[in-house]
Image (cartoon, rainbow, N blue to C red):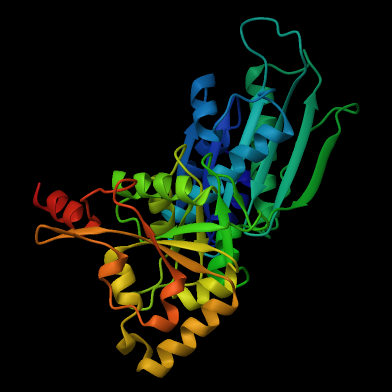
Length: 381
């Protein structure tokens, strides 16, 4: 059974048009039972996972935490849950990720404190709650109930919902609560409030990372060995790291949504960093990444110098003048076509901009793969 106050509070949650993903470790899953006990949970709950095995929790947050029940672990869980919610809802504005990590009474005596940390993350901030329970004053169900009510209160507060379920705390039990700024970098990028963000191999995202000095741009649909080998070869020639760049805007296609971005990023997990940008054209990339070397395949370079993309030769010359002013240049890899390996020397590059194009030697890099061919083979399978 569920009491009237909790039932009414959950009704308000289901009516609030909020999408949530929940991650539990140790306690708090009674809140999920309560959410499902009230009709309408399909409007609210996108996904919920109970990370009881330590390996499962480590897989979620990308590392073995120094301390399982801690504010850092709760925040890491909430961050992953939030991104999962945004992915499953295709970037809905009102998404919450909830992380709850707890230790409560069990069938053996625990040396440490009983209690929990709960974090709720949205597009802009994290609500963080900590509670140490007085040991020996409640049974396991009693402690689980306190944690679960606190989780529902935390969810409601983050969602602007008027709920305050009683926790029935003892006099020496004190609830900690703080609000921490945690703006979603991908949402900022999609909203046009950031020009680029850098996603590390572990999935962490920064909008203030050092500016990359060499980029290999593409749609990476899919990422394949040719891309990776090209980045490695270019890095050796340039003497600097080459990062992959995925533009979320495209001159000829609809912009990528949150779900598609996350799926493309999945390919880079624990393999390589990737830059997400709002710059579909190289003249825009040059403005955003001054002094950068852009690594290109032969076909991309051929399109880059075609004047009709610029409305004529004057437009092309103006675009390359702007690129030159930023100190950017291009490193071009060759391509096998009709039995002939074509290099930058085979391109009809105007003499006025020829110095901006460098050749990646065939002996350093040659991979006869294309994303188009890989997609065609995959679709035919």
